[in-house]
Image (spheres, rainbow, N blue to C red):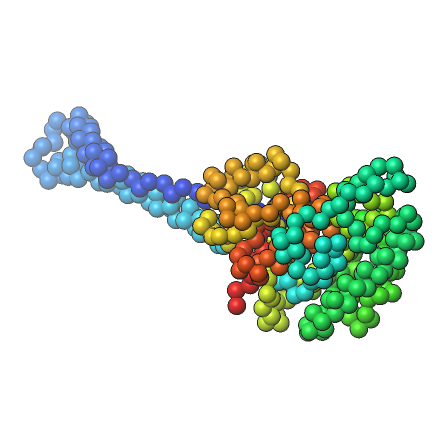
Length: 396
């Protein structure tokens, strides 16, 4: 489950110590009332000028008042110590969760093919603008604005899709091979998110045919459902020393309006794996957080990414829901942040909708621009949910 600081029991306020002035008055009042009671109950036959009389009329009432103050002070000290211990446990748990939340994944390699570029995607989008084009498809009897990896053909079939996927996936893995081979030999986890044109078994079969057998796969997961970058949150929660190869496939059988095709792969090392192998990645990806009406979720995301209010950054927006965007900007301003004040990109308008490849494409653009600009990248996107993450160049 995600790291949520608000679920840690709150700190308790420390009570105020007993007021010395108030207790001076109380002790004096107890002494006076005690003396009056002694005078009222004092036997008439007993002398009033004896030491015993003065002991009873002064010392005993004063001692009762002083004992009452001592008892009240003891109650306060016990409660104070209990709450101090509670707050210490709260702070320890808070620090543990913050440390856990701030441990980023390391980007160890990436490869992709898109209609825009197969290298320096962020630079291509920033410098050349939108790559979507409008085409009229007679077979569909409609015009669509889209971007495909090669010119459109009339043969929209699953067999064509399979051949294209095999070709592009082979190309991506070939591009990623230098990064894979440079790492210490270790088991590899693979997640493949695809658009469901082929079923999971067919995707697995294609993968087995083209992936080098020299690499040991510990876990292979295929899925059609997902939520942008949020799979990272679940993976980081595992706290295991692992390598993850995230592959996302968005290819067309039938063109999709305002979408772009892509096949991409990210090679990531978990925090424990990076520490175990003493490897410093070029770029780190901090834990993503789902944006809600509770501003604590925004505070958590900024805390995980260690982004300060005065730190110059770049904002990337990927098809962000309008209402969610307004809410996020309002929450940010209340915290003293101005998202994208110096540099901001409506990436969805430049690239088109990445479809099921939204997570990988967003992280590729952010990681490339983090290195090129030496600035942290604030990534906002809407997939199943609206969520955000900070990507930045690693501190060496």
